Image 1: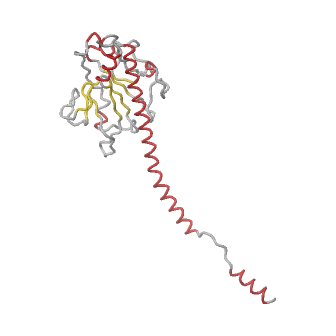
Image 2: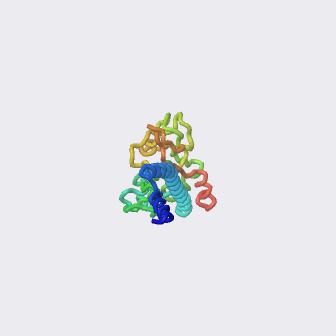
Image 3: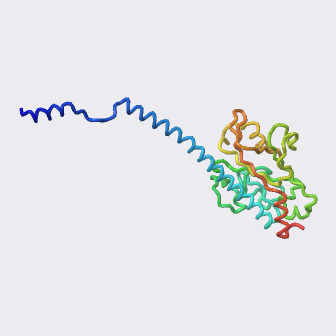
Length: 247
């Protein structure tokens, strides 16, 4: 064999194709897994934040619809019940079938997501709760009831406190009071609605007139992701006065 061909043959024999070994591939997979894990946490947080924003936006729409309804009908609507298909119960107001129930989305004419029973849902698929005061002998849900009672005597009685510690079930007691004269309260139980409620969350579903609202918390034993808002009596009264519905 000529020397030139022999040299080339020897070089080809010594040539080894490049590529990843199993160890190198394993290391790459570990790095990719770590990177993906770091990305998934912020992504899940972004999703939850978006759901919170969407639910809060829907709750603000509900408040505006309630004001518009009160201006047009001289009263606030009663809550919907499981059996009322999204309408207030009873239709026409007066003494409500129950003062705490669900948003009367059909009565308010809202185009928001509902379940198969016509009840309004938050972004986690839970029914948004709605509580209306029955003070002044149901004046707030009776046509012309607020006008008959007059503004000076109207006394809506829903309370919102910053903590469950110290509340009495009738007032905030020693807890910080955020409002003590709300005519309407709207509640989303948040992401963990299907789990056992914490102490603060339990205060929002026990059927009394005192509720709790504070920043979201994942503290073990006292998690709190309820979204709570209420209708200001001053805004309600001012809008009704401006529309000539209250003297």
